Image (cartoon, rainbow, N blue to C red; front, top):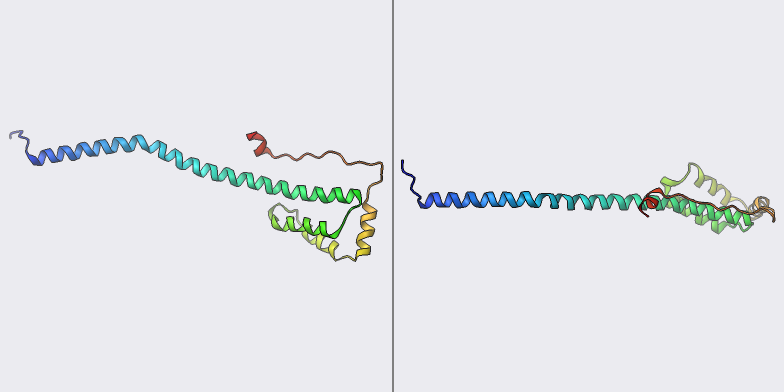
Length: 142
């Protein structure tokens, strides 16, 4: 057996060297490619979590706006319809039975609605306290 280099062996050596170099390059590039894909999915999950938190905050703020109007005696059906639309838009953040209760109040006559608004109006010397709402995910970023 002689170890002569013929054209066939040269082609096999060249092909093997190309495969080794290609494997080495893929090994080097695999980690950046995988991390870039993971970053995309993490960013998407993060975006969904922030929007979910903002939706929850929006429903709480809508209820607070109506509570302030009620406290000041400025209750009207249009504002209540707006609160209802916010709750309907974000049904997952809505307490059970709130939309049905709002519907019942909206079905009341204007006189009954005004009587309830006058009854729930706070006395002149009672003021509202400052409310704070936590948004833990956004707070953790900032």
